[in-house]
Image (cartoon, rainbow, N blue to C red):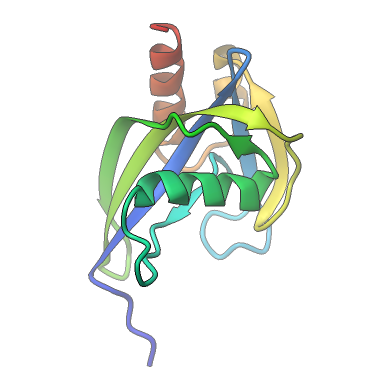
Length: 145
């Protein structure tokens, strides 16, 4: 019997490049929200001795694993969200603004497609819940630079 932990912390990356944000489409084989558009991210996984800057490390790892893009070390928390999954697990979602450092975006792990979008393209894609809110917040923060 596989029991989910009571809490889970996830990090999602709003990756900016030239005023656009990187979005990815979930694989159609994904159990959760297959085919929906989202932003790169994943669970914080702490391995022995790997606790400092875990949010930054998770952002970097997930963005590169899912899209092939490397991000700069300058990562900033821009919003957060919590929700309860159908199995009762309480999820804490941290959404961070990150900046492109190198690499060409491509669909990799658990990803069907990727693209860089401007704010006026948000409504044209079918996003997972709350992702459009994260994107609007990301564009709002980008405009303050």
